[in-house]
Length: 115
Length: 111
Image (cartoon, rainbow over all chains, first blue to last red; front, side, top):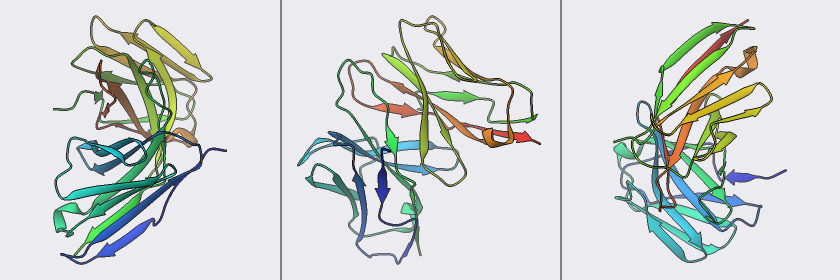
């Protein structure tokens, strides 16, 4: 059974803290994604990684960075958390993009609250 | 702006009825996918339809795609209480790796 796990289901942090969100997949997928989900806005792509140490900015990368040192692990970093980063964060993985046809496997999400 | 927009935003039906939700998009696509999200959880892939396909079935799910109208519909037949969830369409943009998710349709199936 394929699996994407995220380090925490719920997280509460203070403004200005550095926050690490971890994601691990066991499917040997090359592609990994970080999204945030907010009511009325759907899912928005923060960062994408297509290989170890490779990353590309998504639609809303400001205030975030990522790290992919190993194929199975993709970390999202909030350098200095702010209240407008309170959100649900979803990690996903997929096979390489060949011909544009792949499904994404999602983790359960981390609900982050920044106070 | 969002590539995929679902309609309606919310839908409430009785168990056993069919549920139809629609997705519209703006640019050319390679394929379109539908996902389900149970409350507070991650998304689960339901079905993928390629741009050269018009209709696809999977169990109680039927998806249609009309590329001339840039729209897709998801039909769930004989709905069950367990189908209560949010449903999202995701469209890729031709030539890119990114999928754009809509804001979703919240389906409630009443027992």
